[in-house]
Length: 287
Image (tube, rainbow, N blue to C red):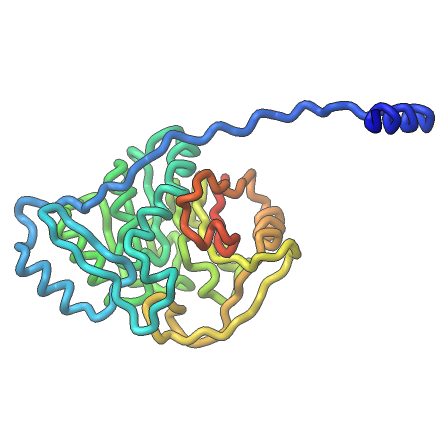
């Protein structure tokens, strides 16, 4: 009765309520599971050698498991809830890698991939398992030492690791450009967000997977913090770092004349907490 009266009143004023058909949601890409536990090469290090090498490195950003039952926890001088969760890199993989592979036509086979600030090489190795030729670099030599240890254990030959500072990254220092560039967990450890995205774009021929902490605000802004290099999860040197909002990322991608981009949606309640709480987000960016 009330609804009918409201409709009649609106018609007298020249208005009418109509149901607007909604577009069906975009289908989720096929799920992809990370290779886990990590495989071991037949001629790789023994159990005792692996244990010795993991003990030799005081800090590990991720926990690792290997075939045969070997497992090692993450180790940080300044642990946080987000960095102490075992398997958090697996959850992140399940969140954004299916969208990346789908955007690449369903396969990374034959793609040349760059992993910026690769840490101990988890995502670089996973891309290699998916058939890509991968280069990963990090500013900290100890992290590249860890990545090369994982390379020896797994026997993957299609990945190369280098010690390099982000601001020294260029096609000249890395042997050209790449089909796909991964910028994962780095942007918010840098002081110049727009320039960092621009430099990332200059390395990519096809697309970028960008994953970053964000300020949970609807405003287009960048929050400045001070960060000290007290742990491998922090910036490589002391100084100001800039954390963008989602709106700021979208404006910068527009400014850089990217062909297209979209934020990867949260499709599961099992996604990492930082995504569920809107403190982190991922984008597929077409160059």
